[in-house]
View (cartoon, rainbow, N blue to C red):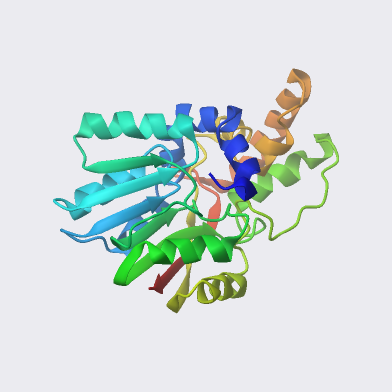
Length: 277
C-alpha cells in the first residue's frame, strides 16, 4: 500500500474500521436514500466489468455484481476488518467478486473495467491526481468513472447539527485543512473537476444530490447514532461517560426538528460525479 496513505491505512484498520465492520448494516440504513441513487447513476449493465473503490463491507460490490452478471466485479479497500465482512457476504450470496486488500491509488490494475465506481471511497487519497490517474488506467477505452461524495459539512445537517449542539462539551478542535484527505475533501466541485481533468479524465459532470441521512427511529436513537458516525463521533471519542451522556441528551433534544414519518432524517448533501476515460 502507498506510504503516502499510511495514516488512512492505520485509521481504517484500527478501531474505526472494526466499528464500521460491526455496524455495516446500520451504515446501509444511514445511506438508504443515497445508495440507490448512486447505483442508478453508475448504470452498471449486464456483461460489464466493474471496479468498486473503497468497497467497505461489500454492499455496493454485491449490488454491482447482481447488475453486471454474468460479468465480474473487483472490489478494493484498505480496511481488513471491512473486507473480511465483504468477503463473507459475497460467499453467502455466491457473488462473482474478486477482493483486494490494497490501496487503489497505486494498485497495478489491468485496463479491464467498463466502470470504476465508488460510494464515499475516493476522498481519502493523499495525492488525488495520481490516484485518479491510476484509476483511469484501470478503465478500458471508453470506460466511465462514477462516484458519490459529500458536499460541505455545513450542508450535511446530519453531521453538522449534532456537532454544533454539543460543541461546548468537546475538547478544543484544531482547525483542519479542508482539502486534507477525509470525508469532506471533495466538497469544492471546481477542485474535484480540476483533479479529474489533471488525472486525464474528460467530460466531467458534477450534479447535486440532495436527500437525507437516516439517523434512527426517534430522537434518542438518533443522538446515539451521532456519537457513532460523523464529526461529533470523532470529536467525542475520548469523552468520559458523564460528558457523553450529557452530549447525547443535548443532541436528542435538538434532533426532534428532523423528525419525519420515516424517523429522524436530517439533510444530506452530495455530489454525483461522472467522467469518461
